[in-house]
Length: 231
Image (cartoon, rainbow, N blue to C red):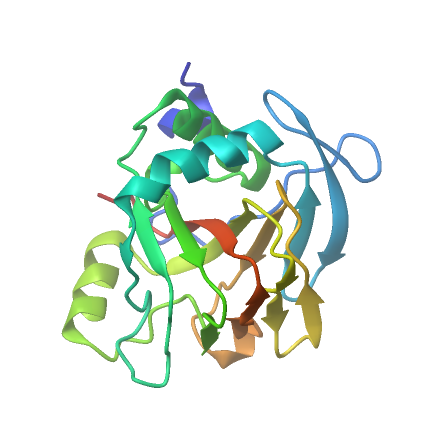
């Protein structure tokens, strides 16, 4: 069932506004009450805003996303730039907007947790990394180095935040490392990592990498939040 956050009716569209996605206030200390489940804040940075939230997804939801995505995987492309320096070795796919009840549930949680209408977000992407595959240091905002990036920002606005979900736990490796913060986050099934970048430049301190998988495989999902309505 769609709620106001899911439909984008609960707030003025943030096109060209001076506000950005931010974590909703926790209900009790580190407890984060989502529309349909309870999550827990493990770690929080204020500058940049970066939050590690356990239990955002259940184990069964993670398994369902993997099962639905696996037959549709294709070689991943670099997300924000086409620079050869941003090597990405993985396979990925995108779900259609609101494709399943589970996708709509996840969208509603994201909209509520980060106070951002889901109309202003890209489609959910699922990516799989095998042994030795990685994503080298990169930023998720668009740096306007290609005509495609410039056109996308003009139409849909800049990316302003990322929500990363761990769908499984590689036996070894596969951490997410934030280089400016000297922070390494180990994958934990069901955990979400949120970080925002109001300024699309290195001062955002959101340069990060997906470390190589050393044993097993790594499944993640991504939701990129935009300054304007997407799609």
